[in-house]
Length: 385
Image 1 (cartoon, rainbow, N blue to C red):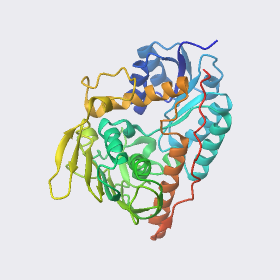
Image 2: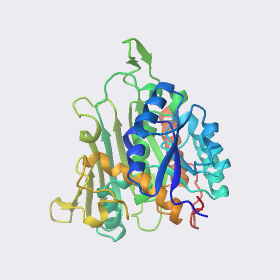
Image 3: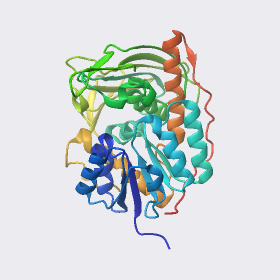
């Protein structure tokens, strides 16, 4: 007999879980948060009390043995993504994993192949696919509004305080810095909208090699806080031959503010016009046609939320609340076997680009992206709960 709700265990209850996953799951009528796991016992108890969760664990293996858990959200340091996801898959749980998906491409391939073989629903948390403006931009590109895409400009410039980033400033725990943090989302944008990236050339810097800890003492940071790179797309249908993109990523852009108010732009220039999205205006896009000028266009109602989402797009901070739809989409894909979410496949091919960007910066040359197999059949999905 099928359960009426999907029981979700959240592994890693601080940071992004508090900001996105917990409020997102609470809005989903078909989900029930049934268990928490975190190595920080004080935080674990605090969140359990806040969300009235009785089943709490400090070891994810114990959570995965809980029969009430049908699916898990993995929001831990990157180094733990693969071990936890693989254990969850082996236990028959559906899995949503934060970006970047893995420490490297080989790990991401292992995760994807295991999830496919097990037939569980798998999702990479590419939150920005759920921005209303991005959903509408994808629709307009698909219907040929600006012809064939030729080149893209992608920028994410923030001023992040020079205090500790925790595990995110440690390469052994995070895998990468800005390339995998903010860059992963933008790489996924490009590949979802345009097609596979074939090769890259990059430059990275660590401008702040030490960040102040809670006690004021400096803590070494060995990941990049700035990156620029050029990307060439593979030749394919629906894109101008020679299509390319330039990426500009920074956590040290002084005066650019942080979060949703900082510079976050995605510009697509095609044979018949231009489409532009800005994060701080998630309910509108800009369209430019030959001989004219850029004009702001509101996102139509049907693109303001993920299909079926109970979220009211007029409620809350617009640069935050769209993110809740990703958890709703995860649950709907478990229940109905859809294939319209960013999966481990998308996380895997993004990881291939991340690895190439880091290698290019180290070797100071163009690097070919790993030849990720093209999926020609629907991704595995299961309606078992």
